[in-house]
Image (tube, rainbow, N blue to C red; front, side):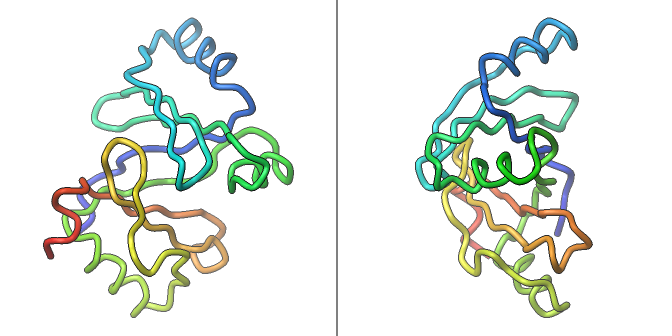
Length: 139
């Protein structure tokens, strides 16, 4: 059901400052910037092979990213796994004892539906499942 690592989410204070590092130092190209109102963030995506790096900048003090930055500073926030069956992946995780942050997928960046598992049940790693919005609810 998991098909690949879709992206690594990295919490940043400023998309502009962080973009400069990824573009100038690493030589990557920003593919697009998007605001995700449901998560109170702005994102910027970079491709590295079949995997993406997603920079996450909070747009509100209530954003989960703002809270993460306050507690941890900038850095890796989550690992996202692409799945061909998002509802089934959530059922499997819950049946195996993982604590779901989202029992029902929510709208994420890049026209994807996403759902997270709580890091207290995933050995400290905030885990995201994602699937294209047009296919995620069909299984």
